[in-house]
Amino acid sequence: MNNITQILQPGNPLFYLVIAWAVVWKGIALWHAARNRQLVWYIALLIVNTAGILEIAYLAFFRKKK
Image (cartoon, rainbow, N blue to C red):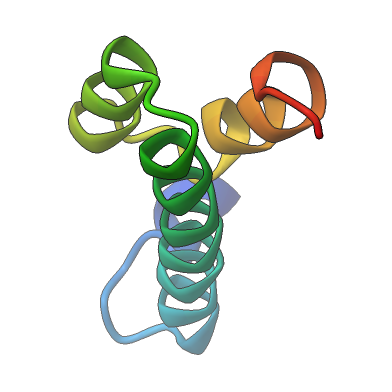
């Protein structure tokens, strides 16, 4: 097995760390998209799983800033 498939095994603690990382970023991004009434972003963030990458990009570049 290569290193990536070893990380993605459910028995590996790093697997759960990646899941927690993604859930935290998804929650923050969904909250901002909902508060800013950005329905398209909300749906995209809800459906697409990118381990936090899309969520971080949204928060850094696309969310409405006050």
